[in-house]
Image (tube, rainbow, N blue to C red):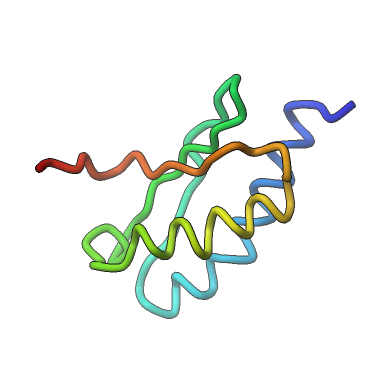
Length: 85
């Protein structure tokens, strides 16, 4: 059985794989929490915060990579920006 520490380690490894790509555009990402229902909450930093394609990056890059390392993750959410209509 996987422990919470093991899951966090695998999620951090996935984020470490993504960081160089974000850094090349002046951004970064950090793990905020992993919820009981295995949702990974992250925060984008730097140019990623205001980037027009950050949601695409989050779904196609971050979530895909995290799920490759930790298939039990149900979703990856970015908590830094509140979207308003």
